[in-house]
Length: 460
Image (cartoon, rainbow, N blue to C red; front, side, top):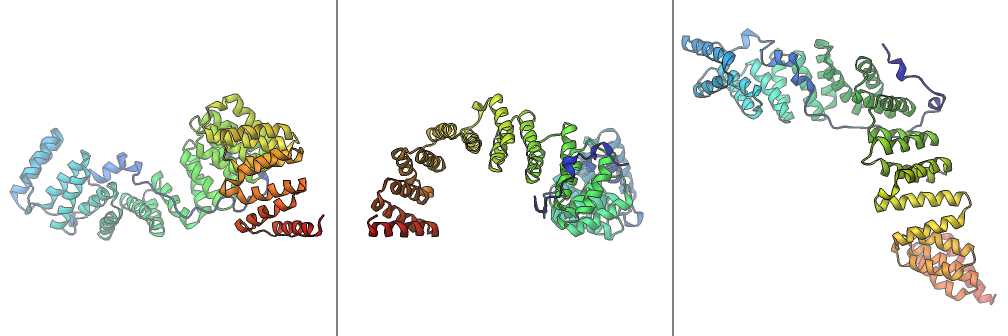
């Protein structure tokens, strides 16, 4: 059934889709492990030898081998550690491969995956068609992250007729780790036919479909999984990313909002959700998300909110910017790192300028310059302010300071020249404009230079 409470759409979330907000993800890292490997079902397949095919099992040919296997089996039931010691003494190059497999299984149970893999490998060398050995070797290699070797062993197990759900599912994950998306998709689809209720295989299939941009299938798979386990953050996130990939960001926003209601908020969720709202020009909703981050993500929530104030100010969303700034101030913005304090001040400047409060903006700009004397943007803004006030000497002083900053030299020299023109000092403006053109040729500056030189020649 559909998880209806997560799908109630407000009027704000029925706006036009935002095309290209976030480009389709072409790949994503796949996990090396899967929770299925710790399940009882896996233990039945692996440790209990489920799916054994008698015709592909090495035969215990002698009475001595049969007796030794009975003794080992009794030890495994009563003292597995002693069984390991007994097998280590007994297993040699000429020993039946069943003993290598048994020792490998004991190593695997004890968490010694490397030694387990070595025993399974020896078993396959002794008995090349030993299905269980190939299967167990593939699983052990997969657990060590040796995906290419795991694929080879698991594929051999499939060739030998061991294509059960476990083998196919882990083969799918190995393909996924190797970024062989189509092969992973095929393996997972086959695994689901045999084990339709294993969520790892459904999730793996979704991950294989995602880089192939089959976003509709991913969303449908995740819808089914969300209905079964609505508290799983990963399901909501993967479906949201599928919606984003198919240019349906407002559907993604619904998922992120649901995660907020489920108290599954992360900085990633808040970042994506705020980006969607900004892209949709829903600035009030974006401000709410930025403010929420201060409480739910204490490590980086303040910095995220500063970025939000900066973004909203740049979009001219004054009331939303003021809301975020006020919350930051109330939360104690003194705790911000120097860079974030600077960004917050600049956001405030944008608001005060937009509101026509030039004097207040100038005071904030002076704070910025005190914190960072090499902030060329603030220096030029102050030069513009002082020029508008007729304080030309102060404007020139700000321009001269900015001229020493390479990234702002051209603009500063043009601004300086404009002030000199205001003062009637045309000859002084010429070298400034020429230097600005050398650094960054621009048609408007070139035209100003022509007009100044013409004025000088005409004596006006």
